[in-house]
Image 1 (spheres, rainbow, N blue to C red):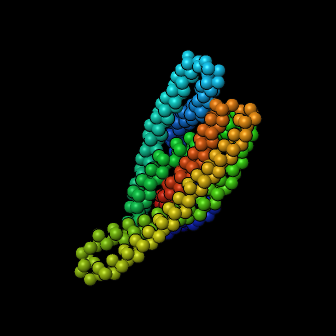
Image 2: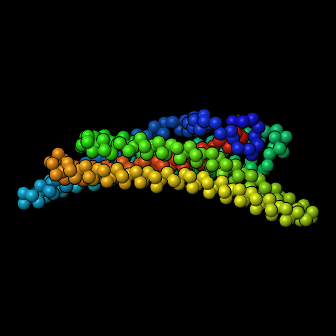
Image 3: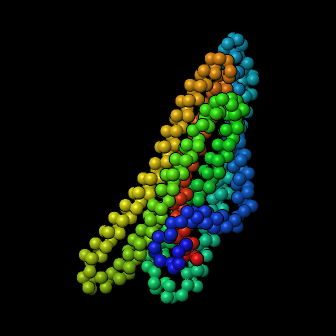
Length: 336
């Protein structure tokens, strides 16, 4: 980060993001053993969800065989359905427990970060405090830390779940049909590349958004604190014009950040729909040739949807995570 602690925008170097993420890891590292439990529970929850479509495909094959032969094995069908219900119930339980533990991890980490900021403010020399807009300092302590907490609460679980789901679904698809798996996976590199390009353009916009938020808070704090002075010297019109300019700048920065980051989700949904169509066409040909059963095709279609959903979730979470990292950079700039 650049020298000084003003409200200026941190220097946007390519290694800032990685450095900030490493510092975030140090902050969360105090809860390491709980994070390990979160990972284990997430693996268990995702594993059960990934197994579900394969089990449903088996139940479908039982129904198809019964219709073809005219002798439905209801006992076998009920057993399979009970196993499916137990699998999804177990996945929900693991996911619920993981979310509860993760909420505690994030809130305790933010509690510790707020304490660090409070201690830092008490140690800073008066000359530094006098040289900084007080509203911007307050924004870093309140708005930025709150934004970081919300982004972590939303993204850690979703990103971890999405990555594990991608791995598990890819493995199941390869197990059922390597050809259909290849069809599904062929668009992934393009999707990831597009996500990376858009996310790279969104990050500096989020930095500007939170810088503008701090500047607007600084002006509001100064005006309300010195309201009597403003009235006494007849500077209301000038103050209103300054506020209008800052408000407009914040609007423009926020609009650009949200617009660019929100391009990611519809883009990944479009790529997911292309993947779905390709699997449906190729899978239909394989069914007609007897290469896979109807139940396996049903499982593949479900896996295709499951495969595109994590990419869409990661795209949405990338924007939220970048907003949180931008706020953390401002907090770390104060701490440093």
